[in-house]
Length: 376
Image 1 (cartoon, rainbow, N blue to C red):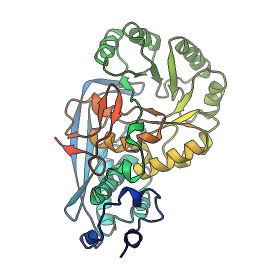
Image 2: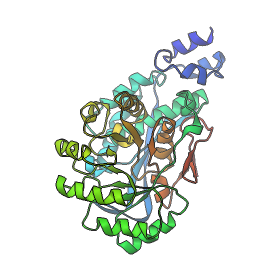
Image 3: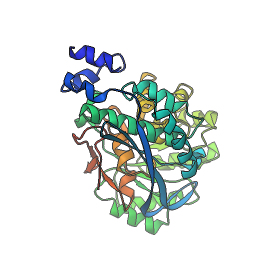
């Protein structure tokens, strides 16, 4: 059996043009090792503690309970992560419910047919995309490990083209914001959370410490377009690079009105979850913020990048508060994007994994297979 016949047999040819060349080291003699369907699925809840109280326009938290998923087959374990978000009606309990439901599904899944498997994950239920993301990440991590290649190589991507990630500064008093900004000295780009009454105080506090480029995320905090445009015009004078989700997701006409009148790009976050959302946003926003936890995993995120770029939109990849599992998974796609905000693991005290590194803000991918993570 030649190499092409092997990959056709395991369901890879036709799914991605990059996989055969990236996985050229796989020998036909290993085919027997991967016979049969079915994967064992288990999970654990990890409480991760933040270095600082995390405050955005919707609320505050000191810790998050994320769910780590393990998919096992043929002595290979794929790892994924769910970071549920109440903005999307997700809790740790609702996430676990979906993962429990998926156990029966994975008893019959052929992991090599991962596109079909991804569609089955997507159709497990309505919403609950953080749980789906964990399952899809673990599945793709398993594939990379089985082929003994990092996912970025499987997709034919250049690891040197990763962008510089921003480092996020949450809403707080001006004094604490200034201190957080000082602590963020190693990172060349900052993302500053606003959306409450003290927006100008926060930006002034940042600017009292640094003249670095800053990006602003209002998290739907501005409810009136006239207020929003005044805030943005003031922010432009402070050297802001772009504005993320200035108004509530449903306020598309108001956001389009803003986009037509301001000098900086407007990036969608809460307004976009999956690829199906993108076409209606192309005239409303200049770009989108893709998060694996919103998209439902790596496969959907890849589709979203392609579609957004086809429509002439900028692409940012962001995150929730996540460990190195979720961040390293997202980083596998980062050579394709324009902006990165992949700092969730940098904001926590007790990351139980290691993976992608950050040097002077730049994402540094390793050569470990799959998503490139290991337990500490």
